Image (cartoon, rainbow, N blue to C red; front, top):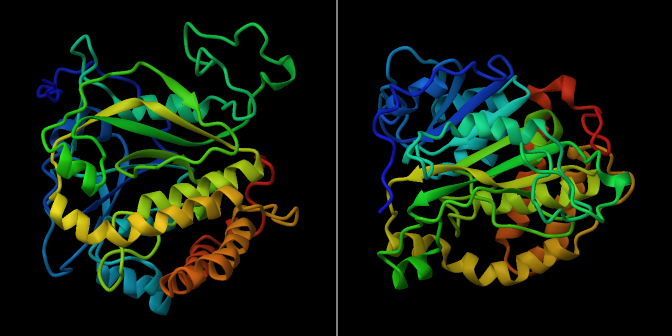
Length: 365
């Protein structure tokens, strides 16, 4: 039986890394009492809270946290007609926080994610581990059998090419979860009592050319390197699909990272996922995606970007054209999604004019 860390107030004080360079983005529809257990780790940082649902509802945030909160009225006011690209009644709304942030790094977490414990019983500072992952290089071009060679106690194994040991910049750090696994609805229905109790002490780079199912509930990324690709799509209210927001962002991001020579890591850190969502509600949201993904994934596996795509924005616009051309045949929804991808980039560049020119070119600013 896995339990969350209940007494984090006694957690050892650590010097907050990247305190002035990182925002924590939280999508929510409820009071953020869960922040109390994260206080020792999150309090030094700035929070961006994206309130979903009824904008007239007041969200309570514990005292002592530095935050800004945006509801749907704020999103409409800031983006105007372009607000149509931000999902409503879906956690995909979190990507608005990525857009308005002015920091280099983003960590995003769901409000049902608690502090986990490592096998020794120590509370895990998930944010600190993400920062370690993102500040060390990735190795997407050649797999290291000791996983992340830059971690303490590890290195490159015999036979690893010396020409590749410098690695490439890490754009994404993808964390995992103890307790409630991130399953789709059919798997939830056949395994209603299954809990993840396995703590694997490993971080590895996802190889170039390999896609992965990205979960947005415990995720960190370099906003300067890959931010414009972290669009969580059109989901939720008025859309035929839900619960594929982070997946869509992950597929787009991985294709672009591979093209630009950037790395994506997965593994540590763990959080404690406290609450299983209703599998019948999830099935209603997912059922079209379960069919569509059998065509979406081959699309992304075959996607290539031209040499002219030297920035994330250029990559994303070209990818949107391919989505319209090829996935538009699957369902008219993808025509709408492709248009929203373009709107997202236009909105991003309006709010971030200094980054609209050339951000990342082959992993270099």
